[in-house]
Amino acid sequence: MELLETQDPEKKKLVEASDHHKRAMEKELTDLTQKTDRVLKNALIIGGSLALTFLIVSAVTRKRKKKKKKLALEAAAQAGVTPETGEEEEDEGPSILSTVGTQLLNQASVILLDLARQKLKEYLATRNTPDEHS
Image 1: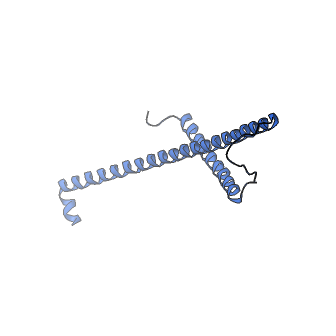
Image 2: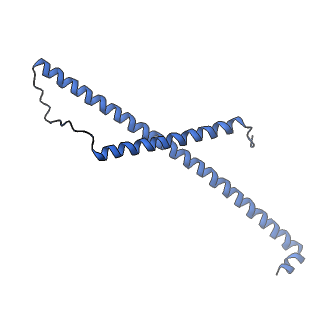
Image 3: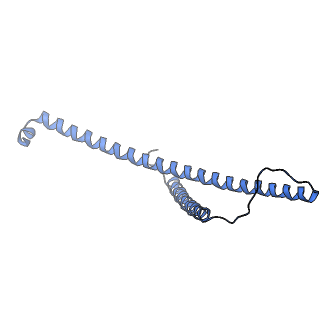
């Protein structure tokens, strides 16, 4: 079969053109895959950073609300007024599940911050080198 293809110059040109187009499409697919990977990694880093920020802010504001409520109760007790909150507060230590969750949150934040640092380093390195496409 190859003997017939090499003897006919038109078929040979068509086969070469087909191979050329195939290589070009594979290269474009590889480039697209790499760009998609970069975009997904960046999206995961940004999403993780936003989630971490939300958790930190919600934890801080929750502590502030508890402090304000405690201060209000103390002020009411000093004034001799019995506040009617309708709920009893129990002062318990953190549970094991809470402690494990806190540790996991801390580890996740360290990992996400390290990934963000690496991506920022890569970005700054590519920014300092001349761009090949422009």
